[in-house]
Length: 87
Length: 238
Image (cartoon, rainbow over all chains, first blue to last red; front, top):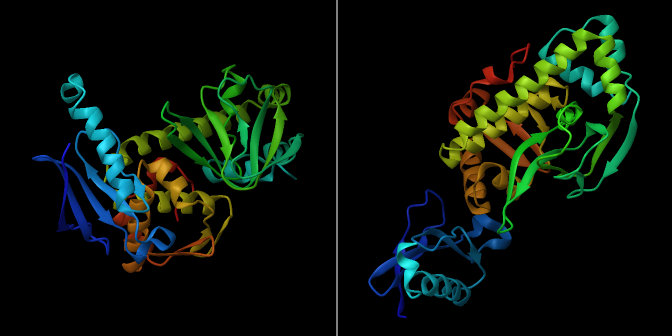
């Protein structure tokens, strides 16, 4: 499954503005935001600001590959398991 | 001496007589110490004592199948969060210490004999239980509001409750709750809790540092939380 990330600025109302839109093919599945220095020991981590159809949100990952693996796992379960998309 | 906080709590919401005050401030029991994260009573337990908090903070909570903890209420000194165990045999939720917490455990027979001999104390405890339910109603409404309001509302509520039992010092009180505990109570991620606290701080409504909350602008904080203290039914307004 093709997972694609596009840079975006997210209006979170805080310093956490650097973000990525995560697309599975043509579908937007998540908005990731890189945590700013506001968050002390979590600064630099990737936060799932919003997700669509992934059933679990607001996770935080120390690096992008971990976030990508998480999205991939959830998207596979959702869109490639046949009945998943309508469940 | 250990049950003095119960007296303070009930004096905040009613006017006990001298005789009732004497009874309330000297209820016999056993002090038990809990570490942070220890359970005080667990879901499914059949308690034979009630737990009066005398130091620290406890929370009623449940854990969902996927391991998420939902905190349903916070309890401070003077509260008896499992008072209902006098009449409901089985705990339908757990009560855990969030920080090192001391509890006065009072045997059910003792509580029962106090309320039988002092019907007005029974009414005071009933009133306290009804206010506990009023707090739940408020939280149901509050949890639908934006993060900013939810957090401001929690600061207002906890500050007034602490102040009512004499645990506030001017416009400051202890704030031992972590962002994660606040998030578990308000249905917010740590990230949202942290962002919102920074926002309230930047607006000079609060200062939160060194385990203490200082309210810099009470009216502003109440406005931010759309907070109306009516549901706490405190006799002395802040």
